[in-house]
Image (cartoon, rainbow, N blue to C red; front, top):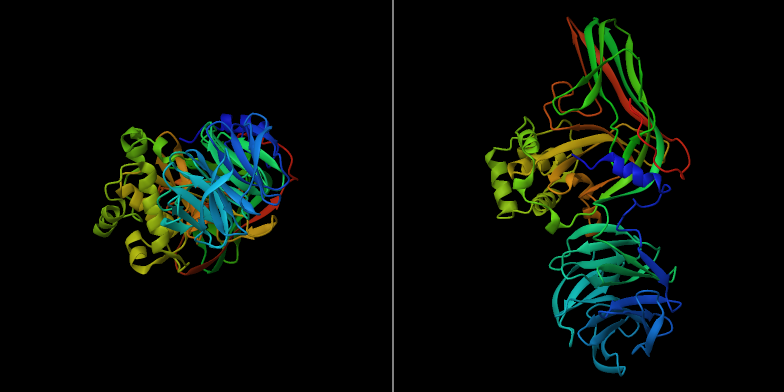
Length: 546
């Protein structure tokens, strides 16, 4: 099960909309002013912080408790950009000179210097043996031999404008100027695992020390300390209060009457970390039967008889919800193993389905090829996610085809991305299901006629985590990472299931069916209208029960 809403709401009630969740790794635990006007690079020497002034060309040694200056030295170049501490030496990148300098901080003596491999040297970090450089022009992360700059490895930066760089003993952290985000990446290939919102609008430097990620901000001229590993397992941001009207309208165009017509309409979900219903959902008409399917999905069942030619039947509801961006902060090494997953989860969400075909030879072969000997549930899911976004291109070709057809065809809709990913996960022994809902299309006042579906996987120690392969099928590593553990506040979640529902089948939001004798043609309209209910500024209230 997901984490309790009681925790999420209790935290949200303490924060205004647009704030991070209480205990969030994005919320600074320490903050103080920099000693300079244009702070750029940042480094940690084991006891103190070093911060560079990009314009003045000075480097300051400051206390991590309050930012007071303990020492200073003149930078070897006119535009010091990145700083890194390695052993007894301080390394400085300069974006005007295009060089990296090795400095003895005691004497200020430059011991070595060399040209950088790219044209825009920015952040520096040291792992104790090698030096890491973020280049904002080449949009590349380089691994270098510290004393002469020989390239050991390189890969694309998380996004377009990498600036700060830090090493925490296992992962690299990279800040991006344009996105105002901070990414935790794997050092070997730059896979983005964690995405955090920067505490300021221009994160120019990063350092890691005292179990804290330190961030300098060029615009606010502050240094913030983030307890990136001490916060909640997820973050909720940017709560929005919305009215959503859902309409399913069927017209009997004749020439003969319809004998029966049935609608199964999912209740918008309540008691989620990022979604709270502010009042009971109002259905029209009001006479319906409440049913629950094998997956626990609550639905309103409407039944009609003798629908004459020319008659229109309309089912609708109005939902008033407060919805937030949801982002899980997952550290792969803290995810438990597959044997720790509760039996009730594996029994329900490892089964086959008519649109999964998990025992098909092609599915089995694909899983063996992609997953290999991997045992960590996070990396199983991530490898399968990467394979899906590399294999499929988005295309709505009509209908929802089975995964083997998608593999052969190479294209699919959001539902087909989801079915393929779920099938692969289940075949690999990782429980998976799907969620779905209604999407804001453009402006806050908008109409959705396409809707959206994504997957969830079960990680021990984290619970159900969203995985959206369709959303993650993008160019930049940071954009791909948005498909792992994130759900937007532009989605009203209505449906959660595993497929083959006895009421709603493989659809989501709503399912409808009809019977007739003779001849009859049915026209259908299915859409939702979004409107913002009130301005930002209020915390999420306790859930209202339908």
